[in-house]
Length: 238
Image (cartoon, rainbow, N blue to C red):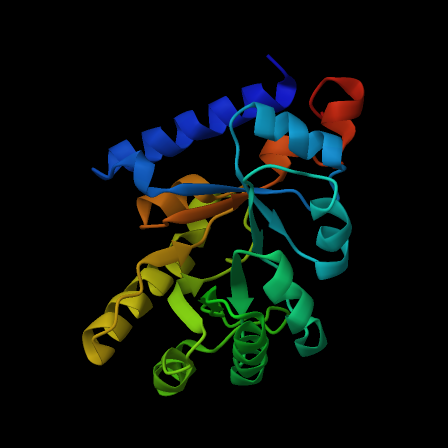
């Protein structure tokens, strides 16, 4: 078994354990392997281990990578998207998790119309209030959601957030809980389903699962601190 396969097995076991602690079915949590900065051979190793969904942060990097990988893989954009990259993003990705403005949503809707497809998206919410992070403020989402939901080519599947980094992952719990509670309020107030909550990364994904994450985005725990190092050396980073 490859190191990447071993890492994936451990992560799935940790997801199952976290889900079990709160009475959830672990099959309700999608693992997105964050493959940014990973060469295609690392992605192939993950695919051979059964991983099918990958997350990329930059359109240009993904554009080069996707062309080298065949098969029925699912690609999600998880990084900030500039409006001038909307056309390429619609062509490349199955889901865009980082819609953080009405302007971007309009561009995606426009290009999805031209492509003749529906585009699944998540709304990125800055629940922690950090100035360094993108996303709608929690009190903005309710006001813009009717307009976004009315766009003909966008499917608003749910919400995404990036919690602050803490050495103790328990400190990220309030951010995850805030996103879940925001989702619940929006569903109740606006009467629309928002089934997906994308939250939790390598350092804190177990806490995110306990708080209701349906999508976790994990890179380092699969591919190592230096992307590609696991494939090249055949061992995990220290």
